Image (cartoon, rainbow, N blue to C red; front, side, top):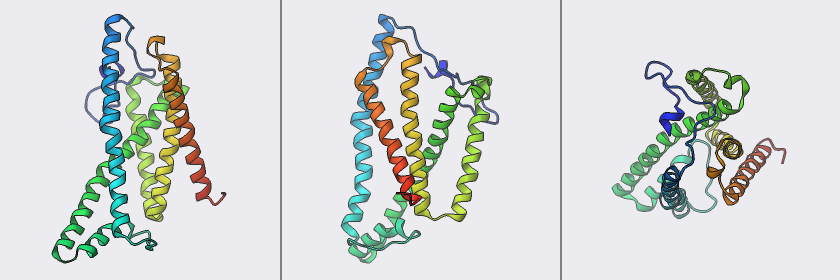
Length: 237
């Protein structure tokens, strides 16, 4: 469907690609519904068999390492937190092998951090551009080929804010701010997807009550989490 919907092209050069404001959808028929259900089964398998276990393992392993090699109550500061687990492994193993593990754990952290931050920044900007491109009347009046300027305008603002915060903020503070902005974005995205699915999709393709309720609960959860974290950070709670 991507060739029908379009995409966000490069701001300089590249192909002249447009992005639809409302997307596109196929006409339901016996043949297309078979393809739709087959594609949907692939998505469900990917989410449940690959994505979900990988996320759990990716979150659990660093936590397990920290619990194993850092004594309870270990004091940290903003600039040493990232390397403390590696230091705990090094001190526990000792010798040349311990130093090797220290380098390898930090290197693995670097390999995780760089692509995750790149994809996270792109996902954050793309999510808000997608919501704005569909819902804001001022943007809906723009030519679909001009989405590149909207996206890279958002990205430039994100970059300036990020550099400013890095120059004046502390790593732990920036981590909380970044994670909480994503909580707001995820919450709004849940309700945005619900609205689009219920208003733009043909009835045959609209999600059922279970998916709709699950999406609503997810949106409420992320928005409540974002509000609570913001109030705690501002010391209003």
